[in-house]
Amino acid sequence: MSSLLAAIIAFVLVAVFMPLAIRLAVRSGFVDAPGGRKVHDIPVPPIGGLVVFPVFILVFVLSGFGAHGHWPLIEGLVLLMAVGVADDFRPIQPWIKFGAQIVAACVVVIPGGAQVHTLGNLFGFGGIWLDLFTVPFSIIAMVLFINGMNLIDGLDGLAGGIGFLSFFWFLLACLIKPDAALLPGPAMAAAAMAGFLIYNLRTPWRRKASVFLGDCGSLCLGLLMGWYAIKIAEFPGPTMLPISVAWIIGLPVFDECAQFYRRVREGKHPFTADRGHLHHHFLDAGFTPGQASRFILSIVFLMSAIGYLGILCGVPQYVLAYVWIAMLFSHMALSYKPERYVRILKSLREGPFVSKRKSAE
Image 1 (cartoon, helix red, strand yellow):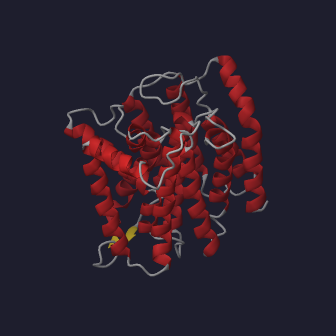
Image 2 (spheres, one colour):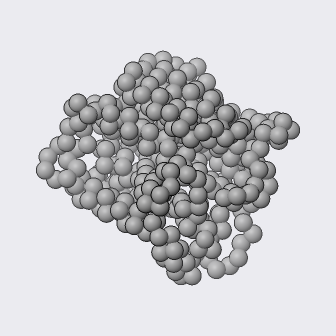
C-alpha cells in the first residue's frame, strides 16, 4: 500500500467514524461538562483520541508500514490511551498520569530506539554529543512532548492543529529528502488529525467543536509527535536537525515551562490546574476562542517555518538556538505576570492584526 493511499484511508475512516462515536458518547453520558476553567458552554464528548489513534494504529499495522521497529510506539500509544480514557471518564491523580507518561517514554526510547544522540552545533562551539546521557535526555524530551501537548489542549482546534502542523513539517522533511522508512507515519498521522479537525476546529461552517481530543488524544498526540521528531532528526542522513524540531514543537514547550516556573514561584504544585496558559491570556485579552486558536496556530506555523526553512537557507544552528532560548525566557518572564501578556495581546487585538468586527464564534 502506498503512503498516499494509507493516508487517504486514515482520513476517511476518522471522518466517517467520528460522528458515530460522538452520538454514542452523548447517549452514554461520556461528555466533558462545562464549568470552571473550561471555555465551552455545552457538554462535549472527549472521544476524539479514541477514534484517531485506533484508526492510526489499525491502518499503520494493516498497511505493513508498522511491521519493523514500531511495536514499542504502538505499545506506548495503547498505554496512554488507557490512562487517558480513565482520566477523561473520571479524573485520576496527576502522579498516576505523569507516571504513565514516564513509562510510555521509556518504552519508546529504550526498546523503541527513539533516542537523541546529538544536539548538533547548538551553541557554535562544535557538535554536542550526549553519549551516556542519551537515554535519560531522550526520556525527558519525550515526557516534555507528551505533557506539553496535554497541557496546551484548551481551545477548539488548538492541540489538534498543532499536531497537524507538526506532522505537516515532518512529512515535508521526508518528501524533500526522501526517507521511505519514515514517510508513511507522518502522512497517516496528519491525515488522521485532519479528519478529526473537521469536527473540532471552529470554521465558518462550524461555530463550535462537536468533539474534543480528550486526555487520551492529547497524550497520544504528544507521544506520536515526539517519536517522529526524534526519529526524523536521528535518521541516517537526517531530514531535519534537532534545532529545527525544537522550533516546530517550541510553543507547547514554552507554555509548559512557563506554567511550571510560575506555579513553583507561587508555591503551588507544578501540576496544579489553573488559568495561566497562553490561550487563557488570549481569552482574557478579549479574543474569542476561534480567534485565539487561529492566532496561536499562526505563531506555531511561523516558528516551524523559521526552524525548518532557516536551516535550508543556511542560518547557523547556534543563531536559531540562541533566538529560541531568548524566546523561551521571554515567554516565561511574561507568563509569570499574566497581566503583562494580557496588555500586549490587547494592543494586538486593538490593532490591525485582528478584526474588531464581532464574530459569532
